[in-house]
Structure formats: structure tokens, C-alpha cells
Image 1 (cartoon, rainbow, N blue to C red):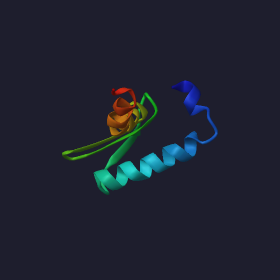
Image 2 (cartoon, rainbow, N blue to C red):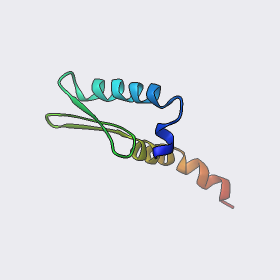
Image 3 (cartoon, helix red, strand yellow):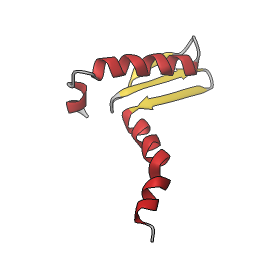
Length: 73
């Protein structure tokens, strides 16, 4: 994950994830950097996980049905 942080667009990605996480968690949210890249936002009763592993899992889940169809008889 360290390699990704040194990529030219990572700061822009981090800013966008921070903005999204703060909007979803509410105005009083605390946004912190994730050890794995990305951010996590917390407010009372709310957790918004915009860490890179979580976003990757969501992306895979979103296309898993389509991918399965590629190998279906």
C-alpha cells in the first residue's frame, strides 16, 4: 500500500475520500487516515469506512456476478 501513497494522484484521491466520508458521517465527524490507505470517518453511531481495502472489497462485490458469468457454461 505504501507504493500507492507515493503515486501522483493519491493526494487528490485522499481529499475526495475525506470529503465523501465527512459528508456521509455528518458535520461533526472525525476523519482519520487509515493505516491501509484511504480514510475512516466516525461520528456518534456512525462509521464510514473509505479505506482502500474496504473500497476494493466493495468494487469486487459489485462486479462479482458479472465475472462469474464469464466462466459459466
